[in-house]
Image (cartoon, rainbow, N blue to C red; front, side, top):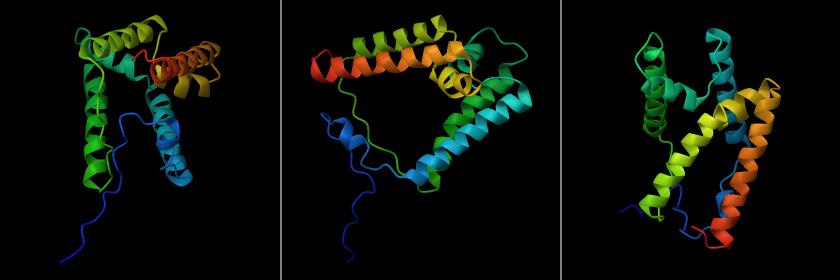
Amino acid sequence: MKPAQEPALKPLPTNFHFKYTMSNFTPLSALAGGLLIGMSVAGMLWFSGRVTGISGIFGGLIAAPNAETVWRAMFVVGLVIGVGLYRAGGGPLMDIEITNAMPLLVAGGLLVGFGARFGSGCTSGHAICGVARWSHRSLVATIVFMAIAALTVYAVRHLGMG
């Protein structure tokens, strides 16, 4: 009999801290991921003249159908298929346990949607594409995103507001 293999990635405990999330960091996989993201958004800008902002692409998809519906749908379906291909190639997925109440999750989702609309884009549009194009608006938006994210993590983890 073969001994039982240990899973490649163990699920994080529900009360994990930042130090645990970085335990599987490898510079080469981070570099490869960054290069793939960079080449993808550069290709989108080069070939279509459009910035790869996920909220804008998805938002345009759920709006009234028009000439752009097909490419937007293909983009969103490609995101889902990409995960399937990653898994089919043997890539591990982390187990995620959501412990917050549904009303809090819904409120958070609505706030993110409102913020993306109010800020004229989401983190992928501003932080990845806009900062790379030296957009001052995107730089400010990214600084605000990150500051609010840091404050939210601190409030939830250390002040018990989650």
